Image 1 (tube, rainbow, N blue to C red):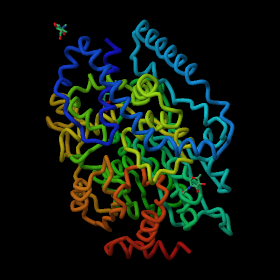
Image 2 (cartoon, rainbow, N blue to C red):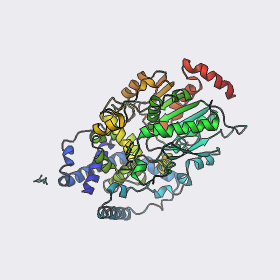
Image 3 (cartoon, rainbow, N blue to C red):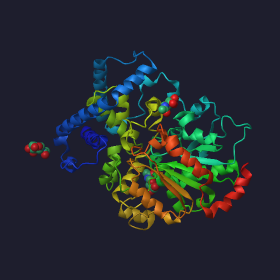
Length: 515
Ligand SMILES: *[C@@H]1O[C@H](CO)[C@@H](O)[C@H](O)[C@H]1NC(C)=O
Ligand SMILES: *[C@@H]1O[C@H](CO)[C@@H](O)[C@H](O)[C@H]1NC(C)=O
Ligand SMILES: *[C@@H]1O[C@H](CO)[C@@H](O)[C@H](O)[C@H]1NC(C)=O
């Protein structure tokens, strides 16, 4: 029964890859019931979709990628003969399935136990470097700090304390905390290198730059008592991050910098969700932070094009979703997409790499703004880890379109947890921190309507800036070729002076200390 489940999920993802709206296939809901009978139907469907994906990549990206490969080194020794590769892949896949079935393991966990290794990337040592190593390679000072949350998670956060060319080596008063999104890490902000990476740009602009890492990602896989392979470790959603990780990190920075430090917060994607959840529940942080800058903000989720939307219809059945996606860490995209590219599309290394990376599948791929030279290093760092429960939480929000709310355990357990049969909504009107929103029109996760709806709820809005490029998507905020001109220039302007009147006086005192 496990292989068919895999096929079902493969189908879910493939049907979305061509950037199209979710189409309802009439037989799909029945698949769960009559699953064994539908296996061959699904396989055919998968194959057909695979051919179309292959066509899409051959038409659109193959040439550029190949020429990139050619440019970088004429040596193509590391590519094995296609027929050898195909049979090796087939063999491996068969073995994995047999092993999984015989040991009654969850198939997804077995197929995707860890990040994929890409042979072609081994040549560039930067791919394997950690965030601080990457920062150091570019001549900046990098620091790692350990922060323990009040529920025992051990987080490693990173810091660029001052700019490369700083005359005196002391960290400036101006402080920014950057929080990555779903499946991301501190590396997201610096992968694009000193010219284009927002972490470096802020450092050059005179900020003390702190880079958060959420529980469960590459740098924060530890707990004082829970085993990282246990369900207890992965039993969290973005709500827990907002209640424990964020306060711990903010408090820590203030301990280091002094309690009068006013921290600017920059979040991307889930990094904005956790900010809104924090500010609407632990409201004292509205006073502690200086301002919030939300890139691709995610709170309301009614206008979603990401395949994550397809999970929404199962969000009532948490147990089923956990079984489908793996109960602990969220990894199945890798497994499923890898399976897909190995069996359905005979595409080359680089195409396959995009095709099977969960970040691109969930967030889309904007060919024109994507710097292909960054692909190896991105694949070396993304996905960095997320809990399945976080995905389920997002899926619930999509299902309850219009409600930005805490985790839904079902009526009975909700009552136990919250004292109400439905989970409490986050009270956005309690957010008094000045906040600027940055959104784009081609964002699969932060749709225009949802972001506007969020903006009008803010008590202390700074500005809602819409990126003036139609194709700009969710992850372009991190790595787009033109992100500096399209987004960061504006962000820096707002950072310098964009705080609304009511807090300006507050700031004046701090700014006097700055120089
Ligand atoms: C499978 O499908 C065939 C033909 O569509 C049908 O005759 C058969 O009863 C189905 N079997 C099950 C177990 O649903
Ligand atoms: C998972 O977390 C919820 C609260 O977030 C808690 O009620 C539940 O007991 C936890 N389950 C396990 C097995 O730790
Ligand atoms: C693409 O990334 C590489 C590696 O960081 C960089 O050298 C190059 O300037 C980037 N190209 C563009 C157009 O941003």
